[in-house]
Image (cartoon, rainbow, N blue to C red; front, top):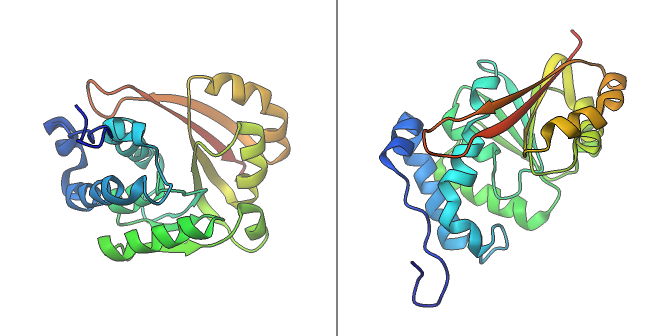
Length: 216
């Protein structure tokens, strides 16, 4: 089904998705509505993403949550429209979320979302990740659809504290990316890299999560 102007209708979340988000349902649903109303207009998501907004983007983002320690300081690099950073802030109010985004219009959007949703655990950084090297450090750094693993490692791992992790949402070629980046990862202090296939909600395609841990 499409709207009268030909744009695809937004995906309607299933009861299983609603149950999965639990106490975070209200803010995540509000975020989804903001994306439906403004996401394409503000150049954040394409019209073809609306029919899979929940299954491809929101549930996918929340899949990172179990890999983050309680009350951790977490940086989301290249937050863009807010995946996974805004979703994680809503699902895990115990986290101190830092959203790092170099594009001014995206930072403006993220600021609007944070205010609209009343997220008091989010800090915005209008910067590239590299600009924060040696200036900031975090227990975990997350990233989704930012860059290939070798390049991503160079941008993010200098921000990860000793014993902390890079938690990256990746596609089906995650194993190949990790293999290609193994020397870069080792040079940057990574002592173990695990790849997980996570299916938070039955009937929704599994999400690939790469967890690279730095030496303590």
